[in-house]
Image 1 (cartoon, rainbow, N blue to C red):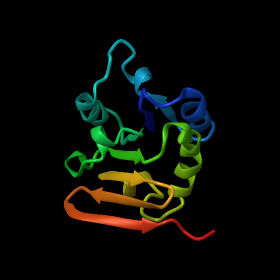
Image 2: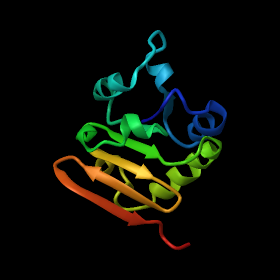
Image 3: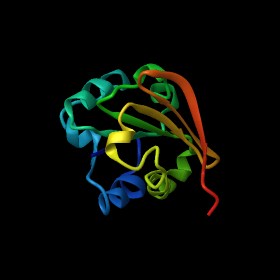
Length: 134
């Protein structure tokens, strides 16, 4: 399941992702709660292997957030580039390091137009991948 940060656009991110993946906004997960950044990992642990999608670098691009029961994708894009998230996510899911839910769990990743960087639970190394040439 993909969980979308409340700060992301429903029209540019949530609705396009719903067309091809089980996707919910964090607002749908907790409709009567304003979910602050520090509460997100707690909520993710309550769900079944979720992947959290955000553009909040300060809140979520941290190695200490790695957990084997969820995954966090931070998209390093400008506000007006949100509509690229569904496209980049599909490209990301074609890479062996992110292809299945099982291999995604435990990762906190930074996805940009230039490359993918990620930390993995149980591993202190920063991994860097280039986008395939195609």
